[in-house]
Each structure stands twice: as structure tokens, then as C-alpha cells.
Length: 253
Image (cartoon, rainbow, N blue to C red):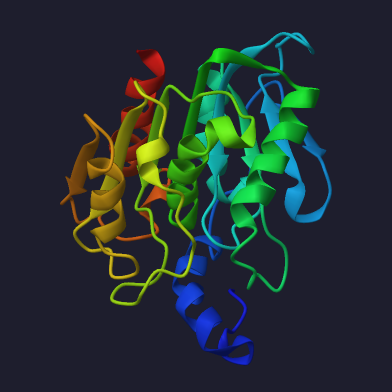
């Protein structure tokens, strides 16, 4: 169950809708060899590093930086999707970027970046094969990390995948600060998805992310099985073809 937002004030009430991404999820589980999972860093500047079980310890791998929805700070909450990425030969860096009571806003991008730095010091990435992905607030932060890659000292991502991104709940002003998307490195592929039944963040932020860069692609998901805000956390067939397969297509280019 999510924490009740009433005690945290009006601002957190708005963020509580983004926190819905932290209310469910699946266990991080697999058949056969277990993935290597490490936690590096401290507090909001921590990150989890997930590597395929047979990957050499210091070998740079193609990397997906995966940013969770508000309060969904455990990789378990996207377990099926993350394991799918590992099975494809990618390592996953999962920044924590926040800690209770989950009301800090201004520092989340810097905290996410520090988590990525800590992860890559432990498990280096193939610098030419980094993709940034995220869901909900994490989808917005994925776009921010790409836009700020040079200033933050991060590898230039070759693609951004934002699933149902949001900076506030539908109809309210932005609460999560935005990095100027025009600073996204040239040549970065940007894909942003919105769902027709997403009553939490709507379509505004996905449209903005996609349209802010040359060649950005906006995808409106109409399938009622996966058009709601929490669909990217599920692992049924509809979620796999809508979210997993589209990210796979970016990774395979």
C-alpha cells in the first residue's frame, strides 16, 4: 500500500499520483542462474546494478539506465522487464534517487546522476551503447538525464525511452523541475509513450518530450489493456508488446 499523502501536505498530494507506480510490481526472479545485483552509493544517491550472471566482472556492457516511478525505489517493482533486459545481454543501472518521505524535488536529477556515476564506477558501461529509460516521474527524469548528460558528466545516451512520463498529476502545474530538452545531444533517438486512459499524468509530458528534439517520436497507446498509468509495471503479453518490444527495438539498432 502507498503511504497516505494527507500528512505530507498539498504538494505531496499531487505527487501521490506519481507514487502509484510504487504500489505494485513483481518480484525480481528468474529461472536458472540468478542475476548479479549490487547496491552502490548511499541514500538517495544510491543505485542498483544488475548484470547478466555470466558477464565478466569488469567487462563494459551495453547499458540501460532505468528510472523508476515516484517512490518505486526497488528493482522488484519492474522485475520482469529488468530481467528481460538482462536476458538480452544488457546491464541495468537502477538509480534510487529518493528516500522517505519522498517529498524532495529539486535534487532528484542530481541524485539520480550520482547514482549512475556510482554504478558505472563499479560496473563500466559501453560508452557508445547507453540507453536511458523510465516510467512516470522516471520517464521525465530519463529525458532530463539525456538533456544534461554533458553537464552531469554522463555518457551520451543514444536513445531515450519515456513510458507515460509525468512531472505532476493531470491538470496541475509541473512540480518536478525540467532540464531544457533542447540540450539533448544531437543524434539521440527519443521515444515517448502516453496512454489514452492515463488519468494520472495524461499525455502532455510525453508530447513535450517527443516534440522538443528533432525526430522525436510520440506514441499514443490506445489499447485499453495497457493505456492506464501503471501498465508499464505489468508483465503480461500486452505490456510486453507495448513497452518491452518498443524498448528492445531501440536497443537493437
